[in-house]
Image 1: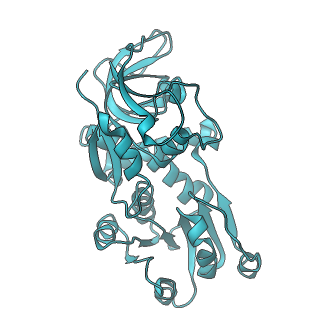
Image 2: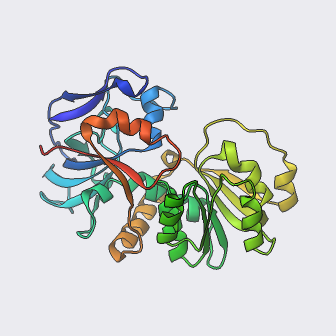
Image 3: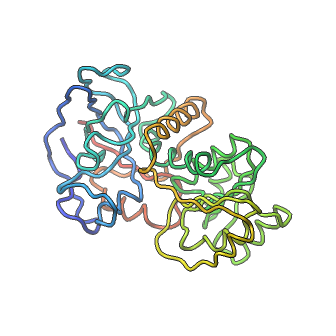
Length: 327
């Protein structure tokens, strides 16, 4: 089969399309015929060697995919050949990841994909939607009638967060740096959308709340926005840090004055119970149509290096996915 392999850590050029052996199903395992693989920022951190836990070399990146069950090992129940599924990780982690025509999974990494969603949309579920669910509800404690601000709301995690918060009865604000991105955020349910490149966007948000501030902020770029977040958070508000690309100087009085809570999130620290609950909630939302993955760009599997460059650029409009050639 064809798969993207990296024989060293480095820039996107280390990602090469190669021929590798097909995975062989074993007891308690499932082989997935991958139709599309999702590209996440954390994939780039691993590729560059800048991640806390790195795979052995060589490795195939990717944890998210949409595809079809090809074979089922003994002891596996609930799946059969031909089932449409999305995956949440692979059996060997990033050593044999999802950027391939086929991959090997454990049963609890495989989830049904509703018929009304494409395989590309299936590839956009795991990291974005589970991260968004944990940010909005597990860590953010969102409640109906609260006001939530989603920074970078047009991106892979931002759009799911907007959809979830709107469906749960919150007033939803979003930010995006382009008119196309802002239109997309409105389309997915935000009540108001702001241009975070404008100098007065904080004032605009505060004015919308009558000066009270927002109850919850989902923060995708804390090294740029956290101080500003704490200047417009309501009393007892919460900020959930989903992403950051550097350090920051912060006056703790901003937190103290509002008795605010700033908490971090990394999907890989979630317990099996937390992940199972998140996937159950996400699956229900997908089936009902309340959650709808937005695909920004589709690229051929061989273009993984270009996808790794694109996913780190500002102004995201949905999810980037790699389309696998037929196996």
